[in-house]
Image (cartoon, rainbow, N blue to C red; front, side):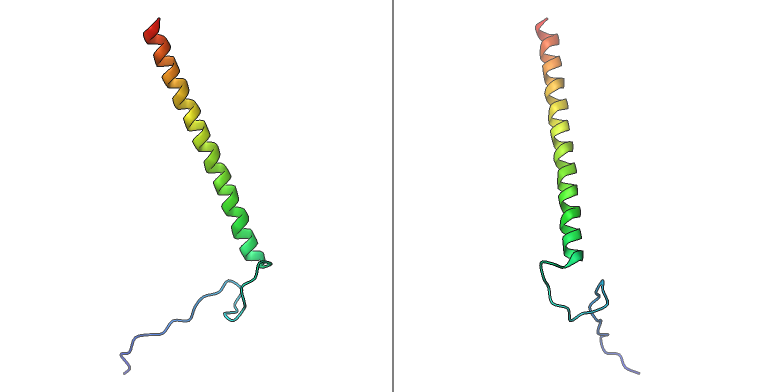
Length: 66
């Protein structure tokens, strides 16, 4: 019985582990596009949060002053 440490092969989405990396790789382009969508969504959430916070501060200030 062999008790040595098992060796795992690297996984690949296209089934080939010897494919060279390139800028024209469709999977890489998809990942970059999805990352940009997520960044754009997060940017919108941050802007909305800041607007909401400023509106809250303004309302509180106006209530105190009146």
